Image (cartoon, rainbow, N blue to C red; front, side):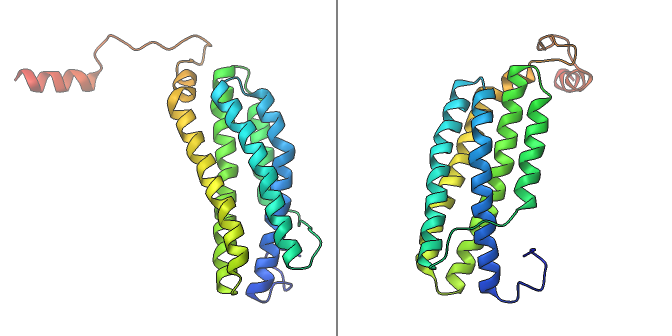
Length: 195
């Protein structure tokens, strides 16, 4: 069943597809996270990814609970969106030798996945409520809250040290230093103040 095929005729069909999509996605994320954990060098980032791996196991369990409530066997449907994000992240992180820059790439790759999940869970919750399945929506909201919290933790990690450390690297592999010289813009401002 493709997202834009004749197989999807009702909101219930769309919910079913979305549920299978995110189930597949969460299982792919479970496979991808250990590689990111191993590659990360920032202790906060490594811990955050390990914590999210445990949460992702819980996300899969919650989705399985919904399948059970629907009296269905848990089944995913191939999701080109998550496959693309994970492949892109893998290629990006596989091409960076500098560990501090690698950590920044890991953060952005992880956040791309988080944003995908946040979008999917938000839609599933809205559809479940529209279909009168508040029981499904409540379960999905637990996961959505965790996804949003994971994204915020990644922001804090990036802003706290990871991006600053990566930003000190130059194209030549050296360390960037703050320049003591006055830039043309600073000279203009300084000239205005003196006038």
